[in-house]
Length: 284
Ligand code: AMP
Ligand code: MN
Ligand code: MN
Ligand code: MN
Image (cartoon, rainbow, N blue to C red):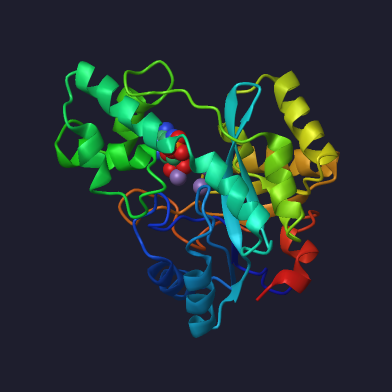
């Protein structure tokens, strides 16, 4: 049997909430044996040109990438886009609209954390922001770790940044159909990111997969840093049931925070269509 392709099609740079530059990520992916790579920053394609250039320098095959924040049934769902034209103005416009509310949301998060006894969190988070258009919860988490409020970012999320906690500000993101359209009209494939992480009932999850298919979505992450082996098997079954291709990605953010490094993931379970087989013509 031949060695399976080491594809890592999900990670983040300083252009969103990661801590490494696209150039540093490409070097790390290469060092870890990645064959096919995609940088998938949240709601942002500003890192794509640098990622592509760095991938070329290391002889890494590359697919353009993005991770779009969507609100579906009042839950935040992430849709990964792969292999689309990152210079398409319709994608740029859609992402700009999606990013729009992040600034005011962050100010409100700062106000709520101040009320909970943690002053200066907005200004503190800003120190960690690499892209002024993209302030996200991990930037706050890094500040709360720096100031000793919590031991690590996982603890910050648990105590302050998830629903029901003082620093959580609900937000309405893009619509599912729009996110899928921005990706597919640019020649790309849309993928449901880390499906096991959403707090859906079985009925809601079925609705997500059905509507995603109807909108033209073609893939689901089966092997991701966010899935246990059991969850990977469960979503392998879902991929077969819904006729979706399977993706694989670490969701790497930072050497200090991520428990799964670039490329260091189990292979896809047998009998699935890898998402990259749909994207042969889009690989750089
Ligand atoms: P935002 O887009 O501002 O809502 O931030 C979402 C990001 O926060 C995700 O992409 C993850 O990087 C991070 N995140 C979300 N939930 C957690 C969690 N429970 N623990 C650690 N990081 C998390
Ligand atoms: Mn993130
Ligand atoms: Mn995500
Ligand atoms: Mn991600």
